[in-house]
Structure formats: C-alpha cells, structure tokens
Image (cartoon, rainbow, N blue to C red; front, side, top):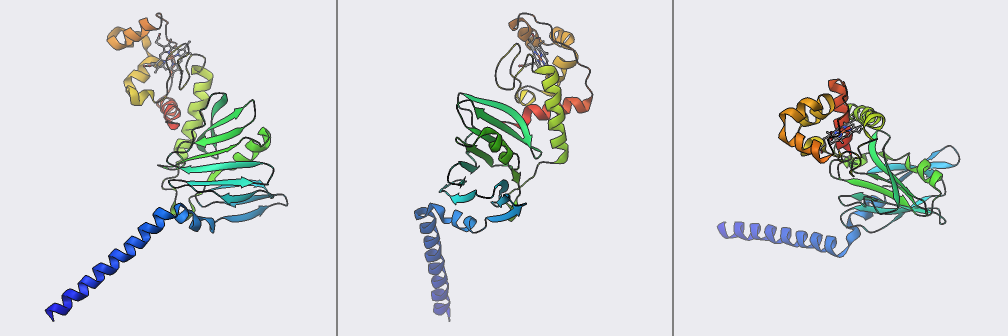
Length: 269
Ligand code: HEC
C-alpha cells in the first residue's frame, strides 16, 4: 500500500513537470503564444455604411470600413497594424509603448473619451496619440506616418479603452475626468503663459509638482506667495533664482486646486 502511494504521487509530479515544460517551451519559442488567442477575438461592427468599429479586446477604435487589423508580434505588449493597404497605423498596448516624444512632434495635452492623452503631429507628416494610463500599468500608442492628419484624428478620437475580457483593471473615474478637464482649462487660461508641464519657461515646469514637493508649497505659490517667501527659505531661494519675479495670486477654491493637481499629475511620465 505504502509503496503504491509513493509511485502514484511521483507520477503526478512527473506529469506536472512535463506539462509545465511544454507550456514554457511554447511561450519561449512562440512569441505570439498569447496574441494568437487575441487575434481570434477581434470583432468588427458596422457603423453606418462606411465606417466600422474594430474591437481589439483591450480597446476599440472606429475606422473607414476598408481598414483591417493585421497582427504583429509583440512579446511584452499587444501590437498590431490597421491598414487599408494604402494608409496604415500601428498600435502598441503595453508597459513600454512609445511615448511619441521625438523631436519635431508638436504635442498637446488632451482627453480622448475622457481619458488623458497626448496628441502629436509632425509638420512633415505623421499623427498619433499616446495614452499614458490606458489602465493602471499599460500605455497605449497609436501612430500613422501616412494618414492625413484630419482623418488620423477622426479615427484616433474614437479610441475607447474597453476592457473586454477584463484587461482594463481600473477605468478612470468620472471625478477624475472632470477634474482633468477643469484643471486643464484653469492651467491654460492662467498658468501656461509662464509654466509648461515639462520645460522651464518664465517659471519652473510643473509636472507632478505636488509629488515632487507638497501640497502646502503648491497652494502657497498660488494663494500667498509673499507669505511663503517670507516663511520658507526654499521659496525665497526660488524667488531669487527667478529674478525676484512676483508670483501672481489666485483665489481658487479647494476643488479648483484639486483639479489643477489632477491635471499636473494625470499625464505622469
Ligand atoms: C507671470 C508668470 C506666472 C504665472 C502666470 C504663473 N506663475 Fe507660477 N511661477 C512663476 C515664477 C517666475 C515662479 C518662480 C518663483 C517666483 O519667481 O515667483 C513660479 C513658481 C511657481 C511654483 C513653484 C514651482 C517649483 O518648482 O517649486 C508653482 C507651484 C507655481 N508657480 C504654480 C503656478 C500655477 C498653478 C499658476 C496658474 C494658476 C501659476 N503658477 C501662474 C511665474 C508664473
């Protein structure tokens, strides 16, 4: 009895090792091990006569009906081409999607269907969208070097993070989306004459300013810079560094401050 029991459990262990080895071998030798499955999940739905929606599982996009999805091989991410054989755009969904920050790209901050996004185009051709937080971990980039800019943005503006098959772990909340658009508006009407998110202009860059400093610092500069400079040595230093330029004062509500913070943090790199 004893002996048989041992043989039995050895067999099970052996079987488990074999199955596991086959799975690992498959994943190592076929990079599209996963994307093959995804391939069959693409769903086309007509929208009127001339456009259709291409649902790629993690997200969907609407294009003229001639455009079809072609699989590419991506190991860490979900990569593909969508083409009508004349024009093509690619997408890349994963941890390391291209951030579209090459020189010559004209970038602007936006939202696409409520999700913070960076839109870019190049005067020499090329248009794209980068969504830094398509979900918690994954970024999404779509880009075309051939599509006419207007058509490109007509198509890209239909991007929806769909989360079919549970791939989207955490959709952005309504509060966040509203906060972002209000914050963006406040920033564009009041701050961006002097501040940009990523580069120094008249004043310092402000991306993730609260994460880099703290809330009191942020609120201090906006609501009472004179007091801040008087009581905070670092603030005085910054003030002198910027040629003693007096900071404009804003009477913002708590919500407005919150919205500005959401905006400066939403497109975290
Ligand atoms: C007229 C130009 C100007 C405008 C408009 C302006 N700022 Fe500033 N800001 C500066 C300058 C210059 C500094 C550096 C300190 C100084 O000289 O006052 C600064 C500093 C700051 C700092 C500290 C930055 C750091 O690196 O620690 C914050 C935060 C800030 N500004 C937020 C804002 C916000 C938010 C707005 C819009 C509501 C705004 N500023 C509008 C010119 C401006």
